[in-house]
Length: 444
Ligand SMILES: Nc1nc2c(ncn2[C@@H]2O[C@H](COP(=O)(O)OP(=O)(O)O)[C@@H](O)[C@H]2O)c(=O)[nH]1
Ligand SMILES: [Mg+2]
Image 1: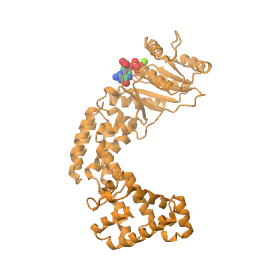
Image 2: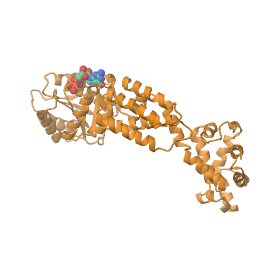
Image 3: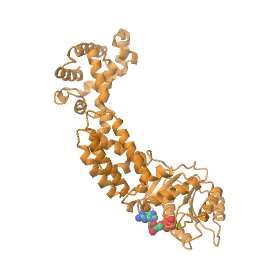
Image 4: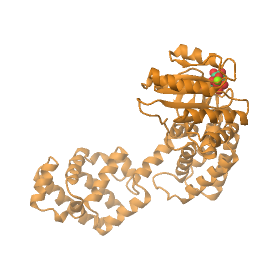
């Protein structure tokens, strides 16, 4: 699945991810590689251009994190762009409550996988507690009704068909009536496809759509047809105002061009992917997961994410500034605790702060103590955290009971914080002292 694209992109980015500096030259090289990889994956030219220009703009505009190399950060930008072009958030089906009949209309070219997908959706939604009725409204291919009925029998899901009818609207109309009468709450309409997009097909599907008023108008598109699938999506969207696309045969698609282009070109999200011929082979489409699969550099991406979430260059700067001017407050102190928690360990926090790595022994920092202190600080008001001198005797009692500690502990904390802060100012210009102080903060 998407192997070729994945290999090419990953190779291109491996070279840059180790770079300690991003220059115009090495950006140029890797961008060329990305362009070629996308074109080879049959991503439409318009999308390739947009992808590349946004990536470059973002990569050059971003402030560089100190904890990761610029090359690693570039990998993250490419990853984020992949997610964006794949459609950002996962889009689920929008169906109505169980007491109303919801309708899903499936459209698409012949052989794209509509009938198979009807059964896949019916099975999935039945498992979620719906009562589906599949509607055989493909009256063009002689065996189409049969195919759906066989699937229905296999899955024990009823199929609505009208013997001898040649008008799909008639079939849909009677299906709607039957759903009400027999308490089905979901109609899945399988329609006729054509070899190519033609006016007669569009006219027919529009008529069916007007009649059925579907909650979901879904195009089933064959991922293996690449840019052609994208063009089909664009035209169907113009005609049907699609609510989504299901990309079938994703299991056989080594290129990935359709997945990457549909949202941008056709403006409609991919909701599911077909990953095999069996009724179980339908997966929700998660842009994030697909992007990770394409880029295969999850380690680098999560490293950069961690760094972004915790301390970036600006943050570190601000912190040092505060230490120097002794405007460091309990609020800032609390922030440090929370960073440690996010990073998972004191060690990883220290690595993010310039000058700390190797200078501080993380074992000397007492995490339980940190937790107790955090509880105390959390029991203060924001105002008190920003100016601990406001905290008088009665508030100390309240804070102690609010945090499950004693007044003595609250007093201790405030006293030590005062001392540390005074010291911060003194030592803040000396890196070695600075790290000693960090250790002390943890022990405070
Ligand atoms: N590998 C694979 N084959 C699929 C998938 N979806 C459909 N097919 C196959 O594609 C062919 C056409 O499917 P069909 O549902 O009859 O297409 P329709 O003409 O649009 O109704 C059949 O052989 C299906 O088994 C899929 O997600 N993966
Ligand atoms: Mg069919």
